[in-house]
Image (tube, rainbow, N blue to C red):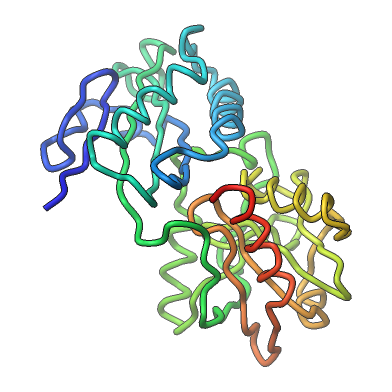
Length: 281
Protein backbone atom coordinates (compact mmCIF):
# COMPACT_ATOMS: atom_id res chain seq x y z
CA UNK A 1 0.00 0.00 0.00
CA UNK A 2 1.29 3.45 -0.92
CA UNK A 3 2.37 5.55 2.05
CA UNK A 4 1.88 9.31 1.95
CA UNK A 5 4.19 11.72 3.75
CA UNK A 6 3.85 15.05 5.53
CA UNK A 7 6.29 17.80 6.40
CA UNK A 8 5.75 19.14 9.92
CA UNK A 9 7.82 22.31 10.11
CA UNK A 10 10.82 20.69 8.42
CA UNK A 11 10.41 17.13 9.73
CA UNK A 12 9.26 14.64 7.06
CA UNK A 13 7.03 11.94 8.55
CA UNK A 14 4.77 9.14 7.35
CA UNK A 15 1.13 10.21 7.40
CA UNK A 16 0.44 6.97 9.29
CA UNK A 17 2.43 8.26 12.26
CA UNK A 18 1.45 10.93 14.80
CA UNK A 19 2.22 14.14 12.96
CA UNK A 20 0.50 16.98 14.86
CA UNK A 21 2.16 17.98 18.13
CA UNK A 22 0.33 18.73 21.37
CA UNK A 23 -0.18 22.46 21.80
CA UNK A 24 -0.63 23.15 18.07
CA UNK A 25 -2.57 26.43 17.94
CA UNK A 26 -4.42 25.45 14.80
CA UNK A 27 -5.85 22.47 16.68
CA UNK A 28 -6.54 24.45 19.87
CA UNK A 29 -7.83 27.74 18.48
CA UNK A 30 -8.13 27.50 14.68
CA UNK A 31 -5.19 29.91 14.65
CA UNK A 32 -3.88 29.57 11.11
CA UNK A 33 -4.43 29.73 7.36
CA UNK A 34 -4.21 27.02 4.74
CA UNK A 35 -4.29 26.31 1.02
CA UNK A 36 -5.57 23.27 -0.91
CA UNK A 37 -3.56 22.79 -4.11
CA UNK A 38 -4.21 20.46 -7.03
CA UNK A 39 -1.42 18.19 -8.30
CA UNK A 40 -1.43 17.32 -12.01
CA UNK A 41 1.25 15.25 -13.71
CA UNK A 42 3.07 15.03 -10.39
CA UNK A 43 3.37 18.81 -9.99
CA UNK A 44 1.46 21.41 -7.93
CA UNK A 45 -0.43 23.80 -10.22
CA UNK A 46 -1.32 27.47 -9.82
CA UNK A 47 1.04 27.60 -6.86
CA UNK A 48 1.84 31.32 -7.07
CA UNK A 49 -1.79 32.35 -6.53
CA UNK A 50 -2.13 29.94 -3.61
CA UNK A 51 1.09 31.24 -2.08
CA UNK A 52 0.05 34.89 -2.44
CA UNK A 53 -3.35 34.29 -0.81
CA UNK A 54 -1.76 32.35 2.05
CA UNK A 55 0.74 35.14 2.72
CA UNK A 56 -1.97 37.80 2.62
CA UNK A 57 -4.10 35.73 5.00
CA UNK A 58 -1.19 35.26 7.40
CA UNK A 59 -0.64 39.02 7.36
CA UNK A 60 -4.31 39.56 8.24
CA UNK A 61 -3.83 37.22 11.22
CA UNK A 62 -0.78 39.25 12.33
CA UNK A 63 1.58 36.34 11.85
CA UNK A 64 5.29 37.01 11.48
CA UNK A 65 6.32 34.98 8.42
CA UNK A 66 10.09 34.57 7.83
CA UNK A 67 11.38 36.22 4.67
CA UNK A 68 12.83 32.93 3.45
CA UNK A 69 9.33 31.38 3.35
CA UNK A 70 9.16 32.29 -0.31
CA UNK A 71 7.52 30.46 -3.22
CA UNK A 72 10.58 28.29 -3.87
CA UNK A 73 10.71 27.28 -0.20
CA UNK A 74 7.23 25.77 -0.32
CA UNK A 75 7.43 24.42 -3.86
CA UNK A 76 10.58 22.43 -3.14
CA UNK A 77 9.04 20.87 -0.02
CA UNK A 78 5.78 20.06 -1.79
CA UNK A 79 7.64 18.40 -4.67
CA UNK A 80 9.74 16.44 -2.19
CA UNK A 81 6.59 15.00 -0.59
CA UNK A 82 4.99 14.27 -3.97
CA UNK A 83 8.04 12.28 -5.05
CA UNK A 84 8.45 10.51 -1.71
CA UNK A 85 4.74 9.58 -1.74
CA UNK A 86 4.99 8.25 -5.30
CA UNK A 87 2.34 10.55 -6.76
CA UNK A 88 3.11 10.67 -10.49
CA UNK A 89 -0.29 11.68 -11.89
CA UNK A 90 -3.15 13.28 -9.95
CA UNK A 91 -3.10 14.41 -6.34
CA UNK A 92 -3.80 17.18 -3.89
CA UNK A 93 -1.75 19.07 -1.35
CA UNK A 94 -2.64 21.05 1.74
CA UNK A 95 -0.24 23.69 3.07
CA UNK A 96 -0.87 25.25 6.49
CA UNK A 97 0.69 28.20 8.27
CA UNK A 98 -0.08 28.12 11.99
CA UNK A 99 0.97 30.47 14.76
CA UNK A 100 3.72 28.92 16.88
CA UNK A 101 2.78 27.04 20.03
CA UNK A 102 2.40 28.87 23.32
CA UNK A 103 -0.13 31.00 25.10
CA UNK A 104 -3.90 30.78 25.15
CA UNK A 105 -6.06 33.35 23.38
CA UNK A 106 -3.11 35.71 23.72
CA UNK A 107 -0.23 33.99 21.89
CA UNK A 108 3.24 33.97 23.36
CA UNK A 109 4.63 34.67 19.89
CA UNK A 110 3.49 35.60 16.40
CA UNK A 111 6.10 33.37 14.77
CA UNK A 112 4.76 30.62 12.50
CA UNK A 113 5.09 26.91 11.79
CA UNK A 114 4.22 25.16 8.55
CA UNK A 115 2.60 21.82 7.82
CA UNK A 116 2.39 20.23 4.36
CA UNK A 117 0.56 17.04 3.39
CA UNK A 118 -0.07 15.36 0.03
CA UNK A 119 -2.33 12.56 -1.16
CA UNK A 120 -3.27 11.03 -4.53
CA UNK A 121 -6.58 11.53 -6.35
CA UNK A 122 -7.98 9.29 -9.06
CA UNK A 123 -8.41 11.90 -11.79
CA UNK A 124 -5.42 12.99 -13.81
CA UNK A 125 -6.99 16.25 -14.98
CA UNK A 126 -10.25 18.07 -14.30
CA UNK A 127 -13.39 16.01 -14.89
CA UNK A 128 -16.92 17.43 -14.87
CA UNK A 129 -19.31 15.43 -12.72
CA UNK A 130 -21.67 13.22 -14.74
CA UNK A 131 -24.58 13.65 -12.36
CA UNK A 132 -25.51 17.21 -11.47
CA UNK A 133 -25.75 18.35 -7.86
CA UNK A 134 -28.94 19.32 -6.02
CA UNK A 135 -28.62 22.47 -3.91
CA UNK A 136 -30.57 24.92 -1.79
CA UNK A 137 -29.81 28.04 0.26
CA UNK A 138 -28.60 27.74 3.86
CA UNK A 139 -30.04 30.35 6.22
CA UNK A 140 -29.43 29.08 9.76
CA UNK A 141 -26.06 30.85 9.97
CA UNK A 142 -24.65 33.60 7.77
CA UNK A 143 -21.08 34.54 6.92
CA UNK A 144 -19.68 37.87 8.00
CA UNK A 145 -18.47 40.36 5.40
CA UNK A 146 -15.15 41.33 6.96
CA UNK A 147 -11.42 41.44 6.30
CA UNK A 148 -11.00 37.70 6.95
CA UNK A 149 -13.81 36.51 4.68
CA UNK A 150 -11.69 36.17 1.53
CA UNK A 151 -9.02 33.92 3.10
CA UNK A 152 -8.86 30.25 4.04
CA UNK A 153 -8.57 30.42 7.80
CA UNK A 154 -8.86 27.42 10.11
CA UNK A 155 -12.31 28.58 11.26
CA UNK A 156 -14.68 26.64 9.00
CA UNK A 157 -17.63 25.90 11.29
CA UNK A 158 -20.25 27.57 9.09
CA UNK A 159 -19.19 25.33 6.19
CA UNK A 160 -19.19 22.22 8.38
CA UNK A 161 -22.67 22.92 9.75
CA UNK A 162 -24.05 23.77 6.30
CA UNK A 163 -22.62 20.56 4.82
CA UNK A 164 -24.18 18.50 7.63
CA UNK A 165 -27.52 20.25 7.17
CA UNK A 166 -27.45 19.63 3.40
CA UNK A 167 -26.89 15.92 3.97
CA UNK A 168 -29.73 15.80 6.49
CA UNK A 169 -32.01 17.36 3.84
CA UNK A 170 -30.92 14.88 1.18
CA UNK A 171 -29.11 17.59 -0.79
CA UNK A 172 -25.61 17.58 -2.28
CA UNK A 173 -24.72 21.06 -1.03
CA UNK A 174 -25.99 24.26 0.50
CA UNK A 175 -25.24 27.80 -0.65
CA UNK A 176 -23.94 30.14 2.05
CA UNK A 177 -25.37 33.63 2.49
CA UNK A 178 -23.82 36.76 3.95
CA UNK A 179 -25.27 39.11 6.55
CA UNK A 180 -26.98 41.08 3.76
CA UNK A 181 -28.74 37.91 2.53
CA UNK A 182 -26.63 37.73 -0.61
CA UNK A 183 -25.68 34.26 -1.83
CA UNK A 184 -21.88 34.08 -1.87
CA UNK A 185 -20.55 30.50 -2.13
CA UNK A 186 -21.13 26.82 -1.37
CA UNK A 187 -19.65 24.82 1.52
CA UNK A 188 -16.33 24.25 -0.25
CA UNK A 189 -16.64 26.14 -3.52
CA UNK A 190 -17.19 29.47 -5.18
CA UNK A 191 -20.40 30.10 -7.09
CA UNK A 192 -21.02 30.98 -10.75
CA UNK A 193 -24.42 31.63 -12.33
CA UNK A 194 -24.83 31.58 -16.14
CA UNK A 195 -27.56 33.54 -17.92
CA UNK A 196 -27.62 34.02 -21.70
CA UNK A 197 -23.98 32.96 -21.96
CA UNK A 198 -22.78 35.52 -19.39
CA UNK A 199 -21.11 34.51 -16.09
CA UNK A 200 -22.14 36.13 -12.83
CA UNK A 201 -20.29 35.54 -9.56
CA UNK A 202 -20.38 37.25 -6.16
CA UNK A 203 -17.77 39.98 -5.73
CA UNK A 204 -15.10 39.65 -3.07
CA UNK A 205 -16.65 42.54 -1.17
CA UNK A 206 -19.71 40.32 -0.62
CA UNK A 207 -17.62 38.08 1.65
CA UNK A 208 -16.91 35.06 -0.54
CA UNK A 209 -13.59 33.26 -0.52
CA UNK A 210 -11.06 34.71 -2.96
CA UNK A 211 -10.83 31.32 -4.65
CA UNK A 212 -7.84 30.53 -6.83
CA UNK A 213 -10.05 28.48 -9.18
CA UNK A 214 -12.56 31.33 -9.18
CA UNK A 215 -9.77 33.58 -10.44
CA UNK A 216 -8.75 31.06 -13.10
CA UNK A 217 -12.31 30.67 -14.38
CA UNK A 218 -12.81 34.44 -14.60
CA UNK A 219 -9.54 34.88 -16.52
CA UNK A 220 -10.17 31.94 -18.86
CA UNK A 221 -13.69 33.15 -19.58
CA UNK A 222 -12.54 36.68 -20.42
CA UNK A 223 -9.68 35.36 -22.58
CA UNK A 224 -12.21 33.34 -24.58
CA UNK A 225 -14.83 36.00 -25.15
CA UNK A 226 -17.17 35.09 -22.28
CA UNK A 227 -18.41 38.08 -20.30
CA UNK A 228 -18.09 37.97 -16.51
CA UNK A 229 -19.76 40.23 -13.96
CA UNK A 230 -19.07 40.32 -10.22
CA UNK A 231 -22.29 41.20 -8.46
CA UNK A 232 -24.73 40.41 -5.68
CA UNK A 233 -26.53 37.08 -6.22
CA UNK A 234 -30.06 36.57 -4.86
CA UNK A 235 -32.42 33.55 -4.95
CA UNK A 236 -34.37 35.06 -7.85
CA UNK A 237 -31.15 35.07 -9.90
CA UNK A 238 -30.89 31.31 -9.41
CA UNK A 239 -34.44 30.80 -10.63
CA UNK A 240 -33.88 32.54 -13.97
CA UNK A 241 -30.37 31.15 -14.63
CA UNK A 242 -29.50 28.72 -17.43
CA UNK A 243 -26.63 27.13 -15.49
CA UNK A 244 -25.07 27.08 -12.05
CA UNK A 245 -21.63 25.67 -11.35
CA UNK A 246 -19.31 25.59 -8.37
CA UNK A 247 -15.52 25.90 -8.44
CA UNK A 248 -12.65 24.92 -6.20
CA UNK A 249 -8.95 24.25 -6.63
CA UNK A 250 -9.17 20.46 -6.29
CA UNK A 251 -12.25 19.41 -8.27
CA UNK A 252 -12.24 22.29 -10.76
CA UNK A 253 -15.88 22.72 -11.79
CA UNK A 254 -18.97 20.98 -10.44
CA UNK A 255 -22.23 21.58 -12.26
CA UNK A 256 -25.55 21.96 -10.48
CA UNK A 257 -28.58 20.23 -11.98
CA UNK A 258 -31.24 21.54 -9.64
CA UNK A 259 -32.21 24.26 -7.20
CA UNK A 260 -35.59 23.39 -5.73
CA UNK A 261 -37.82 22.84 -8.81
CA UNK A 262 -35.48 24.62 -11.25
CA UNK A 263 -33.36 22.48 -13.66
CA UNK A 264 -30.07 23.51 -15.29
CA UNK A 265 -27.81 22.71 -18.26
CA UNK A 266 -23.99 22.45 -18.20
CA UNK A 267 -22.84 23.70 -21.63
CA UNK A 268 -20.69 26.59 -20.40
CA UNK A 269 -19.32 24.49 -17.54
CA UNK A 270 -18.16 21.78 -19.99
CA UNK A 271 -16.45 24.38 -22.15
CA UNK A 272 -14.56 25.87 -19.21
CA UNK A 273 -13.44 22.43 -18.00
CA UNK A 274 -11.99 21.83 -21.47
CA UNK A 275 -10.15 25.16 -21.25
CA UNK A 276 -8.77 24.26 -17.82
CA UNK A 277 -7.44 20.94 -19.07
CA UNK A 278 -5.86 22.63 -22.09
CA UNK A 279 -4.04 24.95 -19.68
CA UNK A 280 -2.84 22.43 -17.09
CA UNK A 281 -2.69 18.91 -18.57
